[in-house]
Image 1: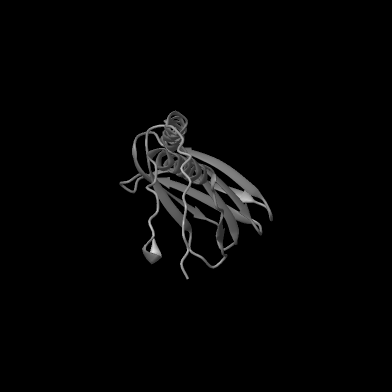
Image 2: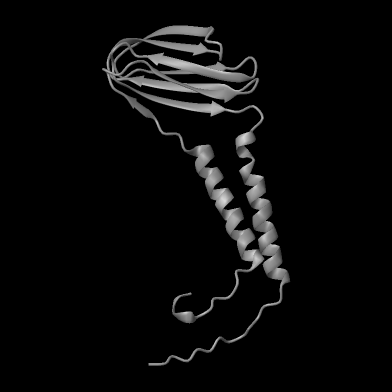
Length: 165
């Protein structure tokens, strides 16, 4: 501390509580926060990808502003086209599609709106739910910290301070 004072050491129970709550809150943001991408009419086709395991799936939702033919292509890590769909959408139309990985590896998708602006939301649905792993770890650390806090004797030491002018 500044001024030559001392601060009490952080208790291990407080560190466990802080770490557990951080994992719970971070896991909540990581798991539930999906931000749609605003794709402008003059932009090239939108493409992205992810490392997937067998049975994982891309859930793609596209909402277009004007009438267009929407094309969604799924490729594996070798660049082989696994799926290619063309869908005609009216103005303000929405299309939802699920693309499932047959084997593990890196998969990429490309969404072509043919010169029409659109809103694109993509979620990855994991079969093994590995993205939920921070929740039990965070709950375990939080419970351990609360247990340690309850089990430790409380110190009712009064901290006196003398302020000098």
